[in-house]
Image (cartoon, rainbow, N blue to C red; front, side):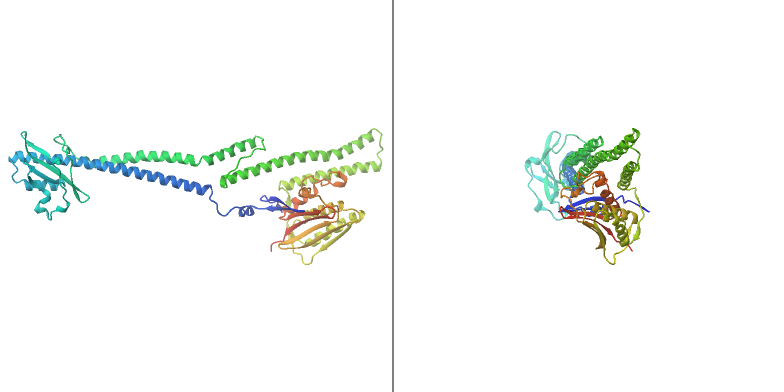
Length: 502
């Protein structure tokens, strides 16, 4: 035993004078999707990568800029403090020695310790000590000298009298750069700025710039995701309206990304729900109309017998009985249709010979065909494969097609049931020489309670559910049902079933 497949989705294809119903599975639907698409995921990944790159670049740029400024500030403060110490040391040297005797070694040692070049002049402006020319340090770097302007020399005072002047230079990028005037502070003692200040400044800059870059990144993400959020908001609003009963609710769709695909899916779902609701209302109306006629006939006959207007003769009772049978047949068809559409119909799938089924159905309908002067014949190809099917349900489906053909074929006409080979299974078809079906009615012949000729009543036209049930029974077993017709020539109904797997 098996149940109706829950993954089947039916598709109707109308080409010319042919309409085909076939089930689609999830794998078929998936294969129809494009293989490559610059979709939402790729765009989000690229957008976030760009935002991250811009944020990191901004942090690196501004942090580097701040670090350069802080390094220059530290160097300036270091030069100022060391120049102050050199100036103070020279003043103390002069006062301690009463002059500049032996100044060369002292200047060289001080310059070496402070990593600065020192040039000292006496009160007359004559250079009396210059670390750049000290012979003990090795080869003099005269090619790196730069002239030191007079304004770069700071006066040295002893007891209120200028006894000399000093210029301090530092080596940067291979050249000696004299320190600008005013580098010497008034404070007698001052320490060089610690490196902790530099670390704190860089950390503070990183924090500020990081917060700014994060805020800018959040703003860019909000701007970038605005369209996606707007589309999702539209979907949410439409879904709420749909849930409140507004089946006409739709969403505008733009683009071809995943959000657009979701919008198309939502609109298709809304179309299906609206169509289903329309069919439900039509079904309720049609079923009520279909039940009203036999019930009214039964009620009329019974009331006439009760009032003595009609005798309970065998003929009258047979009329009531026929109406009751018709009513019971209609209810049975409705129950079967409900089970198939709800995928709750149990199937007994077994390997079966199609030839036997065709012969049995043709022979069972032969007396009825002869009664209305319709020639009925069967054509079965040799060597048909075994097909996995529910025997009783396929008999019922073929019987519905054959019943429909006989009812629509005039006396003297011909109805042929044929079974033949197909690439991956078998094909069974019923061909008649009836009046045919108009082109505008052909796509609807498998719809519930649909009649191509509305003038037919329930006695001559059937319940209108036979072809719908046939379609459901065939598709439940993995088959495809189709119909072809040409007005004035006849119709051809058939279904294809896959061969059984060995």
